[in-house]
Length: 93
Image (cartoon, rainbow, N blue to C red):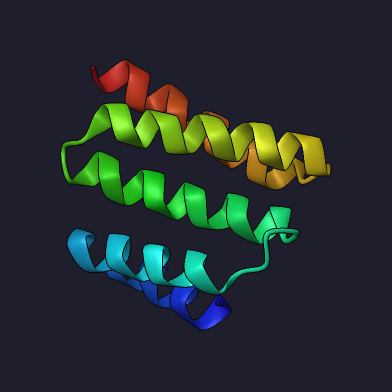
């Protein structure tokens, strides 16, 4: 799962957004349902990819879900990152 997550993040930096999205979807199939932090991290990357692909509503859904999950798990860095990206997404609309 971590390898696919890192690969997805790399794809974002190289503007390969479709590939990034595909890697997050593949990784989500591998991560345990109990791995809340891992799922939240994947949702953040997925949200970034969706935003870059011009799908802001789907991106917002992913980022809101990631922020809530990260907050509930005590993963403050993740909730802050998701909230920051959601704020940027809202400003761009």
